[in-house]
Structure formats: C-alpha cells, structure tokens
Length: 640
Image (cartoon, rainbow, N blue to C red):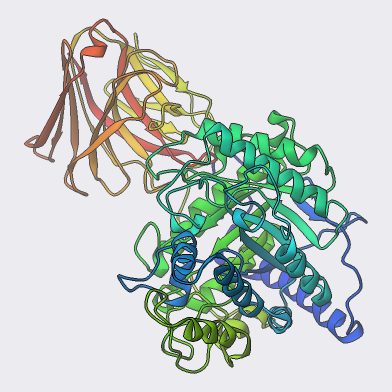
C-alpha cells in the first residue's frame, strides 16, 4: 500500500493519502460513469466479454482493462452458520454438522429437500439486481465440494452436480455480473476452520484428497471453459492448515500446482487465482517460475479483526506498509490480484469510509475486490452499527433450533429467506457509490529507503542474505562496535529463513551482546536481534533472541534442519534495551536487559542436536514483508 521505499524509485503505489484519494476517486468515477451509462442504455445486458490476465491487469477480449468490484455470496452454497446468528451451544458448528443433524432427524431425502429449499431462497434474482444497483460487476461464489461429489463415491460427480453453480452463473449473467468460482470447502478440508464446511479436519493435503480436488477442478473447467460470465477460478479458499504451520508452504504450493494443471488440461482461457497461506502469497514466487500462464494471486484482509486492534490506526498501518509491499511484489512478478475478502466491520475502525478507501486503493492498483459479504441475517432486524453485510433482514426474525424445532418450522424459516424485506446498509452503499469518497485522514507510516548500504565490515565479520529475499539487505558502519543493519526477508520461522545476517565463525562456547533499537515497523513481526546458525543454509538449526517493532523480546530455536521453530516471549513490549546470547556446549541462554544493563529475564534451552555444530554467531534483521526493508541500530557489540 505507498512510495519511497524499498527499492529506490520503484514503489509508487501511494505517495500520500491525498494522492490515493485523487487517483482512486478518478478511477472509480470513470468506472461509475461507465456503469451508469450502461445501466441507462442497456436494460437487458448483453453477453459479458471473456476476461484473462495481461500482466498485472485483468482485460477483456479486446485487451481493455476491466476493474472487477463486488462482493461474496457467502452462506449460500456453503453454510457458515455464524452468518445466521447460530451461536448457541446446541447449534451445529458447520455445514457438515447441520447436514448430519437434519439427516438424523428427518432422513436423507428430507435433508436434501430442505437444503434445496434453503438454496432456492437464500439468493434469488432480486439479490443480483441489488448487487448491480451498488455498481458492482462481480460476485465471488463460495461453494462446498459436496455440491459436486459425494463422500460415499469419491471421484464421481453427483447426478445434479452443477445445478447450483449453473443457476448462480445464469442469474449473474442475466444481471450483467461476472462470477469468480471459489472452492471454499475442499475434500478433506484445507484448514481446521468451520468455513471449509467441515471444521477440525485439515486433510486436503492427503494424496487421495488432492486427487479428488484436482478431479473436481478439471470437471468445473470442462463445464465453464466457454462461459464468459465466469471471470476466474479461485482454486482454494484460505489454505491455512492448522494455523500453526501444518502443512508447510511447500505442500500448499505443490497442491495448488496440481490444481492448476488439472484446469489447464481442459481450459487455457480462464484466469486462475492461487490463494496465499497465512504468510501471504510470497511463497509462490512469480507464476512463470512454475510455468503457469494466465494466473493471478489472491489474499484476504481483515486487519483489526484477525490481527491488531480494531482501530483506524491499524488500518492506516496496513495501508501504508502491508499493501504497499504487496503492490510492489505484484508489479515485480507482473501478475493480477484479487482482494478476495475484506471488511472493516466496526464503525469505530472507520466503517463505511474505510471500506471506500480500500476499494479505492485496490482500484488504483487495478486489483479486483470482493468484500465479505452480501447478506447476513440475525434475530434483531435492521442495520446495526457494526456489521458484515450489504443487506440483512429488516424485521426481527425467529431463527430456529435445528436440533429441537419441527421440520415445519425449519422449512418455514428457509422459505422466509426468499421473501423477507431487506434492510440495506445505506451508509455503506452511499460511501461506495458516491463520486466523491467520504472524508478520511490516515496516518502514513514511513518506510526505509533502499537500496540498502553495503559498507565494508570490520575484520572477521561477514554479511549475507540468508535464503533468497527479494530485496538485498545491507549495513552501515557507524563505529567499530556500532552498526546499522538493513534486512528484508519474510521470516525465520517455517524452516525456509529469509533475513540479513552479519556474523563471525562461532565456537562451542561464546557470549554475544549488543544494545539495539527495535526494527523499523515494516510489519508487526519484523525482527532484529542476535542469531546463532549451525550453517548458512536457509533451513539451518538456529537460536535467536530478538525484538519486534513494539519492543517485545522473544527467544526461539530450531533443533533440526527444516523444522518449525519453538518461540517464547521473554519480556513484553518496550522494556528491553540490550540482548545477550550465550552458548556453553549444547546449552544456549538468552537474556534481555534494560537500559541500565540490569537483567529483565532469561530463558535457556539444551539443544543436544547442535553438539557437533560450530556455525556462525551474529546480528540479524528481517522485515517480514517481501518487498520492504527494515533496519535496526546495534551498539556496544561485544563477542567473547
């Protein structure tokens, strides 16, 4: 998301809040003008032109850029029960539990009938007309693999497999709206989250489930390869695994590669979107490195809801730093992008004005954008100050207990979905469709200018970029025992480290200490500190003591090559001024000290796997954002 920074003269996404507002407002005004003109002159939309990737842009068959701007049709073809305020202890937790419960109570045929009734009513043609009235031209369509394939007969399509995808795409076409087909819940589940349709699994990564997912994508591509209403195939929603590093990024990349190839066996025309892991999209590298063509990337953004506090400042930081880095990375890779899900939700964090700012920023970069979500229902009707929706029920609603209420009550509830009066979020609609955006001032975070300096180091010290960071790190020598260290790189966590490392050869007994500033805030988890490495390979066993930008001090180690690190917080934010790392044979001890060199806390670990390793000891910095530098100043560096 801004200018001036990592690679000199290259980042030009946002030079100031004013520039973003002007560029995005002009972009959106042109888009709205075209949208209004089309609405006036074409009451019956003509067929949409097919789309494909052209560099960073999504273009039509004449090569003209098409700005995709819309929403998700959540809770329609994959049920996320929180979107119907099912929070009670006895409510089903996901679609799988809901189906099991309905089947136990009413039998297979009645369960299927009730689900069909629900789908007939949650989204109808009127909903596409409302979406169009918001000047949107695309919907992302989340669906559950169970619509296409039954677990009892894996590798075979259900007889009615494409009934609902066909219906959704046909209604979208009638309204002149593109569709991004999104496999939201894959066979076995691509995470433990309920949004896969069956929580607590994370089994997609098994060979048999990967094969099933590839089979489904091949069949989907066969079905829609000649359909121009389909804008893209979003291969896997949020492949986040167990949220603790399993599966590793490499497994996600190889799985996605299998899905890409399955599509390309039958369909060369449609844009394919590959989703980032919890660490983002940087794990993929450029599509060309995999031999992928007509491929883009996608991520979901919820700052302040899932990461950070819900405040305008959290969004300002995200805009200035996170999005800026992503924009530069996408430019370098020459690849299009979809902000597949995002929502500010909370009025206190900027609400509708911040949502407009996000759409404007995405538009200024040519990115497609689909907010979560179109519709949510709740017990208490009407628009509430903090919300996830464009429309909701206008009147109060009795939401049934699936476990105890009668079939007739459940059936009546499902029918109500299609006839209920809506309350639209008029504040959001006006903010998104007005020619001038609502006034909103965001603090801008500065970035470290690049390229990094490359001063020659004192005798016996050497510098290296561990792994293959996209931006080269460096150092400035301020005095014999004082260095300013610059580093990019994603992290030292999952066994594929990226950082800038200044080191000397290590013995099996040493003590290294240095006073330091926290790293420049390129990312919440940027790091600066002391590091021991068994070798200079990216997957080497390591021991570190480090500071994050807020001053939080952590101690971490990796026992074996390629393993995920073990990390513990030593001292909370803002107290640490000096770090010390001591090795005594196989025992490593990390200490955080205050400004008077008084120890605040110490942690240690016995690491017998490192008994034979000599390795390197030194200083490191990483930005945690692939296209941004961070830096920290180290003083009073002492190695004994």
